[in-house]
Structure formats: structure tokens, C-alpha cells
Image 1 (cartoon, rainbow, N blue to C red):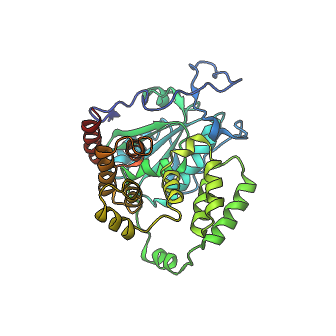
Image 2: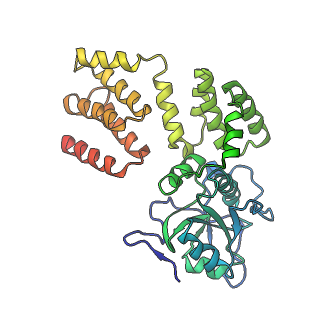
Image 3: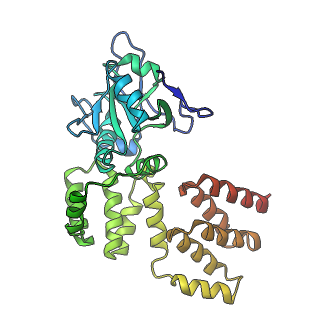
Length: 338
């Protein structure tokens, strides 16, 4: 059995990934061409990237991949369960950021996928077979084929979006489900307290600050949530949760959904009401209805509020997952603009 990309997909090179910089001061081990370590500065932080290991294979859904078990535990196993293959190295700082998040998600998804960890220094032939040019690189193998992948240490929100396109978490056993149902739901105040302590212990993890901003919004502390959101590094600003929180902050104090609908019905040229209604509909998981509001403004009042409708549409396209919906509304936007 051999690994082949799904027809029509570009796997080698991952053209959508931003260029990576080589890790300063590192030289490739003897006998191997240098690999580039993807190093988003906003994620890097103060990490001891010379640590001995980043792999935790204690959980049954996380395992080490070698040349000996690759065919049985990755290729053959992927016929039943998708396998997420993480190419990493002990000297790679971003791998230390990404690895624990992938392991956490593997546990959370409860067997919907398995996480295989490939140490590229110990398994150079596997890295060469996959055409690995930078690390961390992650590939999803399903039915013996590479289905999708990415390079670099993505924030947790984008990792969840990546996984959601292909797998869904499996339910626990009935006993576990009963225990989960009986467990108290964490309050917003408790979440804020927990996250503040976590940030104090691990200030190099910016994704915790996004979690804190969301928790502060749940608590109703709008100003503090806005301050945390504005302080996030650039790579997290486009995270789906950050975009959603930004919309929520923008709507703080805005009229209700029902009131905005009444305003639009009473005056179809109330562009402010249409704009706010579109944002509320996006938050309420009615993307088509929200995009329709932005298109209505774009069609009749393109210049309103410094071209806000076009900006809203572009921002929405960047965060929505429905490719067919995005394509359809992109074409409608282009027909209005050109």
C-alpha cells in the first residue's frame, strides 16, 4: 500500500501557508538536508525549544509512528479511523506549541481520529516520503490517502476548524455521558479565574488569552474582553472565535435582532440597521441571511460608512467554512462590484 494525495489536491508545499523562517543557530543533523522550522513569532514566545520531547503517547489515541509501524498503524488503520500525522522534532519550538494542542484534541475527539507523531530526525525516510520541507507539518490520512494538511503551529480555534471539516467527536460511553451530565458547568467567573491563573503560569501561550477574552465577554465585562482581544497577537486575530467575539463586542448595546428586523422592514434604506442585522445573523449561525443584508447595502449604498458592506463580506468569507456558500456569494458580490 502506498500513500497518494487525493486527486486534484496540492499536498506538497502547502501553497496556502505563509513562508517560514529557519530556526536561528540550528544546523541539520549529519546526512540530512536542512528542514525549516515554521516559527510564527506571535506563537513562539519564551519556549525552551531544546527540550528532549514533546510527545505524550500515554493516551490510546496518541502514538509514535516509525518506519516499522507506519503501514499497519497509519495506512491500514486509516481505512477504519482517520490518522492525523504530526511531523515534529525535539529542536523545533513551534512543535512544542502545536503538539500539546493536537494531543488535547485527540483526547477530546475520543477516537474519532488517532494522532500519530513522527520524529523527523529518527524517521528521515518517512519525512522524505511525505515531502516534508518544514515542521511542524500535519497531514490527515484517511482510506490510505492524504486527505488534507497544513504547516505551522496553528492556534487552537483554527485546528478545530480544520478537524471539523473531516471528523466529528465521538460520544463517550453511557456511563461517561452520565458523569458529564452530572458535572457542574463552569461559570463565567470560574472560567475567568482559572484562565488568569493559567496565563500567569504559562504567559507564552497566547491562545489562553483568547479564551480569557471569551470568558470575560460571557461574564459581561465588555471593556476587559475588548482589551484582551485588542492585545492578541496578529495570528490569533483571524481565529474564528476572535472574529465572533469582535462581532459580539461591536453589538454590545446594539438593538435586538427583532428590533433590527422591524427597522429594516419599516425602512429598507436604513443601512445601519441592515449592517447590524447582518452581523447578528452571522453570530446566530444564519450566514446566508446575514450575507444577504450586506449585499443589499453593497447594491444600493456601496460607499456607505466607507464601504463597510464590502469589508463585512470579505471578513465573513474568511471565517465561514461552507465553500459552496462562499463561492456563491463571492460571485454575487463580484457582479455588483464589477
